[in-house]
Length: 508
Image (tube, rainbow, N blue to C red; front, top):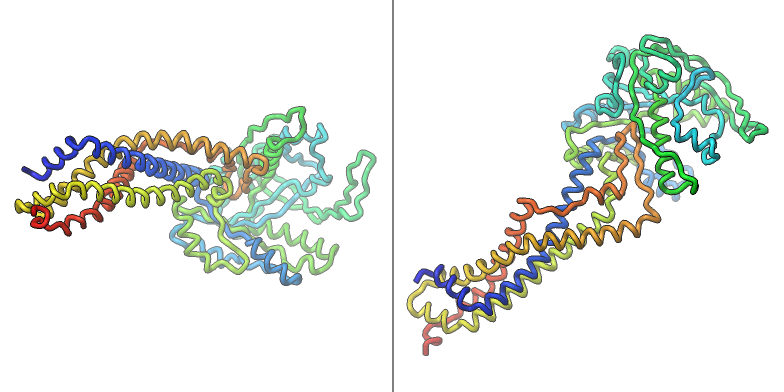
């Protein structure tokens, strides 16, 4: 009789032992299936959120390293080492699609109106938000660019609705051509081709006199006017911010306030060549150096923030590894996806727990199945001896035992693929919700610079909402691979028992 037929008859005739082995493998397979489901779901949500965050990288100050150095050396001064040559060198990486480096400056006006979101106006009227005074003197942020097409427009963070972007010649020469937001243009009835005059102000707050209404009487010095030509108008994103309730400022209101400030910042941004921003900075640095001492201006007016747009989010880790050695001491490469680690605590904890459970379940499966199969084989010693005494090859005897165990395991694993997925879905949802509730008192979200990384300010709730345990073909194949592989490995050890069988002794 063919050993495959013998295996089938052995399974069907020994119903008690077959059901016992089935139950053991089914229970362990459910644990393994649940752990794999959780890990697969965690991996999918990580890919989804990180892809939504984009593939943007920059070079930031490593504040932990600076703080550590400062505690041992109070005279420590961080030197600016982010020179254009270094940024250009890193920008040539094969992982970079395009890049830019920006320097910033601020300008003001006593005649032009700057944009304030309605939410901030409401908070000011309600007494929930008070300004320090003198905002008009530095209301407009000049964002210097080196990439003429402007990364924020290329990456759809703002939309060019009229006019054009800069030319390379304008960037290289530092032409006084700028782009302003639609909000500012509408408030001041400006259009493409109009001249724009803004001033650099030096403001000394040290001798400010508080007026009767409680606001400081700021004394500002006009350091010089700057004449520009408007060549383009962009539309900044509009944040949907609901008005505050009567219960005062809550955690939700804090998030609304952050969004309102971001909206105001973007709307009052003016894009110009880097050289224009540097010229503005030189004037203000000279003023404050004279006001507060020469040491104030020792750092100079030149400081750049690099922005690297990578080909795809998967390149972030490779880009960091390739270029971290080039980054000066006390600096580090950070990326848009770094936000994920700060907000994905519940999901990552669940994934780590599932990893531990998976390892323990596999080891337990190997041990338990090995012992069970070994006990079954001892009870069948006479049967196996007869096979060998009749001249049956040991390999076919091995094959019969393997087929018996794998047949039972295949049926148990097939059922566990579905039941384990359902168990993982219900259990992980409960555990994640419990962790989320325990973090509500301390989790205030994670806000990133929208003009650097885009308006992808995800929260822990966003990550949890994206978490979903689902039955996929890859999960099923992985489950069969792990389950059958574990069963096969557990069966190999008892097969050594057959090698020790001596047919002559058994038949005597």
